[in-house]
Length: 122
Picture 1 (spheres, rainbow, N blue to C red):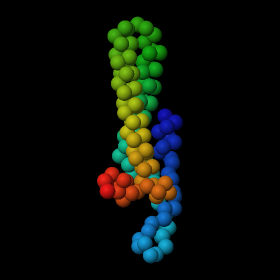
Picture 2 (picture 1 turned 90 degrees about the vertical axis):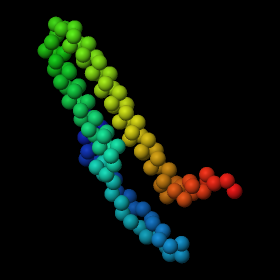
Picture 3 (picture 1 turned 120 degrees about the horizontal axis):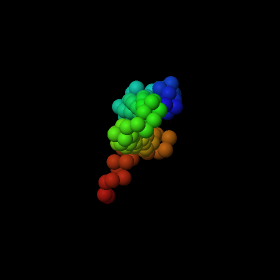
């Protein structure tokens, strides 16, 4: 739940220099990024909220049940595995988007043009 709350209230603002023409100095643009702008972040938020609600409900069910029904325990174990798989998929989705975004940061000296020129054989 902390991950969903932190991501929901955060935004990042950064000044990005943009070169319009090679002869002119770069123009500084302020860019603001929020979690709503990216589909993988929306997926991350939705799955974290679903997992948190599920964890709360399963905890309440287990406390109320107190080992009376073995079928409920087995069902919750299977659903726990499903939730675990969904949470791992969200981490993978957000992680891969974050790592590919790092490749295109101008501050690192990498951009689409330089990445494409690296692949060409001369």
